[in-house]
Image 1: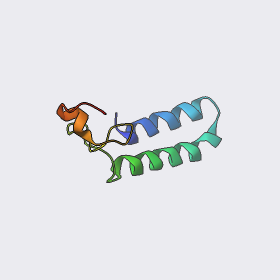
Image 2: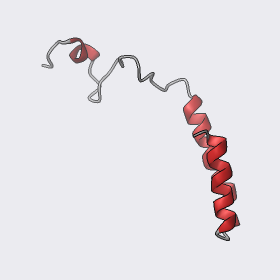
Image 3: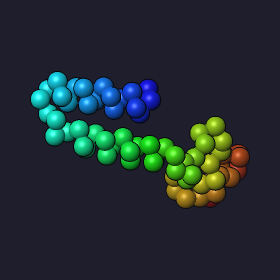
Image 4: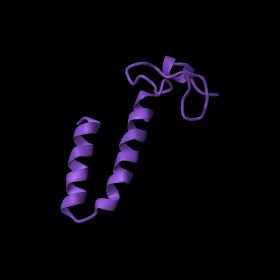
Amino acid sequence: MMIADWLEMAKADAEGRGLPELIPMLDSLAQATERLRAADWNDDASKETPFDSAGESAGVAQGRPRQ
């Protein structure tokens, strides 16, 4: 689902529930989500990452045991 489609549905839902005060917050959430998704620091899930969750080199993924 595209962010714009979600935002349109979320705004309609908020209005339908009588909660128009949510609309500015929904707009802000959509903008923040777009910026996070566009950030250049996002990893490409199809590639090996350079560090694992412990901050160690990806050597483990290459078959070298952790010490």
